[in-house]
Every structure is written in C-alpha cells, then in structure tokens.
Image 1: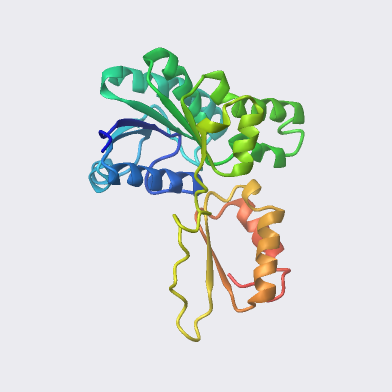
Image 2: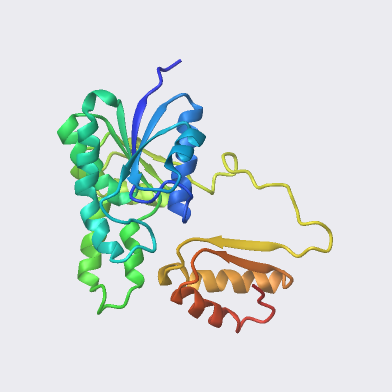
Length: 272
C-alpha cells in the first residue's frame, strides 16, 4: 500500500463553509485525501471557528489574514491578483521538508503552486474546476476589454506548461483537450468529472414525500455571470416539465440575483 503523503492544499477561497461550486469541491477533495490516509495542510483565507474546522476535517489550517478574502469582499479581483504572491510565501515559510506534494485549487492558487515548484522542488498537481477567467467573457467590453480577457484566459490555460507541473486534474474531457492543445501531455491530465461522474456522485434515491413539490436549490455568490441565459433557460425547462417545482437561492441577495428573479418571474408558474 502506498505511503501516505503530506499534501499542501492551496486555495484562494475560504475553505469552510463552502460558498459555491469550486469551494464545495475543495471540501470534497480534502475529505477524500484524508479518507485515503494522507495528511493535508490547507493554505487559504482566514475562516471563522478555524480550530473546530481543522478538527472536523482532520487537517491543519494555515490562514491568510492580511486582508479579507471571499466572494463578497471589496475589491475582490484586485486582491485575487496579489494573493498568489503571499500564498507562495506562506507555503515557503513552512518549508520544503514538511510536504511531499503541492495541490492547487483553481488558477489563482495555481500561480503560487507553479512558482513553488521552482522554489521548493516539490511535485505539483494543478486542479482546474473550470476556466476561472472565462467568466469575464460575460462582462461588457468597457469593463473587461476582449483582448485583455483573451490574454488572461490564454495565460490561465498555459499554467501547466509554463511551470512544467507533474499532473493536472480537469473538470471535463473538453477542458482536458484544451489543456493538451496548449502542449501539456494528455497522459498527465486526469478529468475528475466533479459532480458529473454517476459512480462517484450517485443520484440520491430520496424523493419528496407524496404531495410535496420538488425543490431545486442554487448555492453560490450570485454574480451576474452566474445568472445568465443558461440559468434562465434551465429554470424555464424545468418549470415547463414540472410546474410545481419550487426554486431556492441560498446565498447573499445580490443586485444580480434581484435582476435575475425579476426576469424569471416572467416564466409562467415560476415559484421561489
């Protein structure tokens, strides 16, 4: 049986409680790592009740506390740009001898992980739950000029090649193909299909009690790019087939969510 690894798990999102899809995946991955006997050090933004969280998940937390991080933090995008520099220093301060592997979650921490590979000489695995900069495509051109967005997306997808990392996890076969097209060896990419693999994530057999309508829950930061045409069409499709469905939106009531709900109320039988 392989020896347990000492893993430095890097993330730019508060580890717990999860605030969206990417942060929920981080919790799942850490649980899987500890379940398989590995020792996990999570490097990420400061969280409340950290001691209890560390005990609950059987991990060691290294908390970034120079400024507030999170989906609702002010000047969030500028903080994201500066964060990898400090994250790299946090891990390096602990030292090479404490870890066998660096695992980065999302592109922001991948930048720090790539630099740490050169600095500490440790194996690095980068996980891409999505193309993080891709959401900027939905922003108006005066906020995010298209050439700038294309440059950021190109930089993100080049990270595995740029830093010569030892392996990559991708959300899908399509994303794996895009990474390979940029020159990263396909045999070193492992699509993990988070949330989509029917064997790893089986559909629960629990159904609503007779007479109780089905409830669909959406959880996240409710930025405008989360609440576009795909979300609207998904609701319209569900309501057309099951008009009794109730929708729940769990998170901060943002301006983007308010606008989306106003639009969704034009769908006959929409209930929330």
